[in-house]
Picture 1 (tube, rainbow, N blue to C red):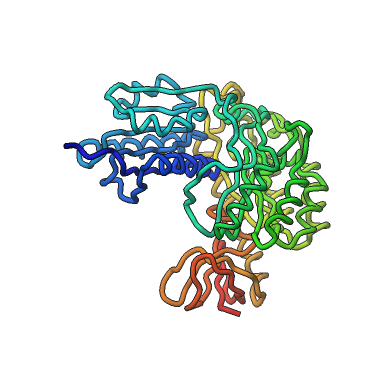
Picture 2 (cartoon, rainbow, N blue to C red; picture 1 turned 135 degrees about the vertical axis):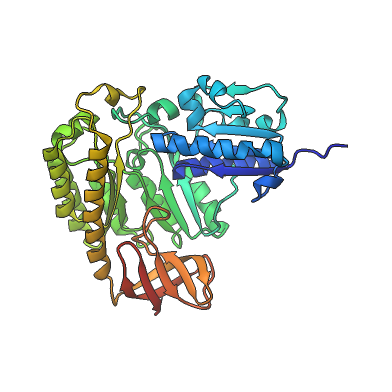
Length: 443
């Protein structure tokens, strides 16, 4: 007698928003009686939540799928489900590319994951409902958290902007903000479960609420959250230069549990490149924005991401970006090389930059940022900060983050402490500074 399919393995690729989707799928599967296993060899069903934002992400997704597909021959796997952005972007043509997969779920079909893993019958299915029809999660949506001390809190789905390099509006539909009462209720539930930090995510977090009736703003939500869960750290990622307003800056300044941390991807600092990207601001606007943040909150940490090698980017444009980064001196900065694809409006722009040139510019900018980051980290020497413990590295040594370090994208702080456990907040005096990480001892 065959045993029922009940062991499941899920791998989540890509961004923090994908992580939330994966945790919600796991919540649905757990409620249906599935047991999550950390061992893919023992899994009766495997789900891969994919990313295809840029070429390297799509390649990673495909490599992961092919590696796990082998377990249909060597392991217990009877059903392989691929979900998320990869099938949404490449749609029915992906069925021929990946015949090893049993079910494909687009970004509007996450709610079908239980039926997908339970109804594998040898016939490939591709479910691609309109992402715009997706209803944002409710206040009581089940989730299986990846970490007990920190949780991403999705405040909106989709994006209504039209940046020429970005496929997200097509993959996720227009912006659909969650009602504030749903966000607050989930935050309170997560806090009651022991979560110590909530990281607000959306495609454009600082544009939250404009699409609701009546409209609201991120600043209002931040004020409400800070008061609802006063003991929990709150930070937001994925801001937009056009929607960071004074009220948002004031909300961050007003509450000690809101991290003075502004993640605002600028994408570039040359006006001609920004125009070709479909970004409706210029370098002067960016200078005013970061000056306003630092005037209001002098200790605020600034993080951004930029794209080098965008079509039409000249050496003069790149020099403008280098000079801007050297002027602002971001605490954290990520650099992407432009990823081209025929389904992007930017593909049709003239002046594509050779990959070797883009790689060279990437290296130059990262070298500059490493110098800036090291200098900024050295300013923390001798100072004491609260550190949220995330990992027990070895006996007597833990790794965690301060309020000016976001999960996964920034450096960490190592602390000599023999008693702390994951989820603790400890005071640490900084004794050593590296390019991206800090080290300290219990204060």
